[in-house]
Amino acid sequence: MAHIRIARAFWPAAAVAGALALAGCSQGDGGSAAPAGSGDRTPSSKAGEPAKGEVAIPEGVDEGTRQIYVSENATAACMRKKGFTYTPRVAGLAAAASPVDGQDYELAKKYREKFGFGFFAPAVYPDDPTVSGSRAHEALEANPDRAYLDALSPAQRKAYDKAMGTAKQLASGKKVMLPGCVKEGIEKGYGPEKSQVQLDREHAENEEQDRAAKQALNGDPKLISLAQQFASCLRDEGMAVTTTQPTAIGDMVKFATATLTPSSGVQNMDKDDARAKLTQEIGIARKDLECGKKFRAAYFPKLAKHPFSGMTG
Image (cartoon, rainbow, N blue to C red; front, top):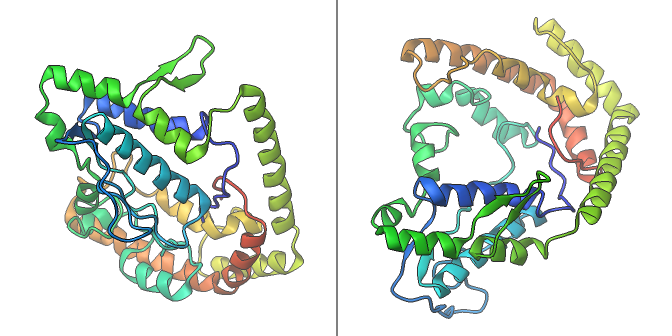
């Protein structure tokens, strides 16, 4: 369970972190754009449709995901105006609830019966694009503009880099975005850059809200009882229990299973060894799902009322 609360203090903290990767990528490995014949915005044929070169924001996404879409679309529009093409990088952002975490029991059951938690699956199903980390999935996530960028002349690449804008680290350690389309996109998606005083205050507020949310969940009598039942079931199945906190037990077995993967990753594992490991993982994942069925059915509705940021377990 990756518990993510909609963040309130975005850029330059969180937003710049993502933009740094984007801008850095543009400088060295074929980032994200190419020269276009025109920077004009193509009007939508219907109200609400995205302009040419932009992507529609799916209905029902959370505020954080919506801001990413807005930011990426704004970056694309800015680059078009400067005579370049940038393809918004939003692949996978609007995915439905994770099939792994058990919030949707039937979905999780179907997923875990084939992929377990998803750790060894990339080695066994390298050509399945639905498996995160598989060769096919990584191909979907690859830079869609790489071929265009590779065709740029040195002069065009220099102009492209200037249009995108770059990240700069100040002597104080703070990272900021210099003028360019990345910065314009961030501002459109997340609002104007906030002062350090504002960021510090909001960070403190976020931490306090996280503390209160976790306290509410970990102090809930029903969740405490169900977590104890969850733990007892796991022990009966021969699995170690390292926590019974409601905010942590849901991911406990998954995190423990992750330690079984080789430090070098699973992509280069022997196929038969990987399949044997996946079979073991599937068994563990199914037991965890069944033991935690009642707990998760009660936990996720309460989590929606007391969301917190970050990941626990």
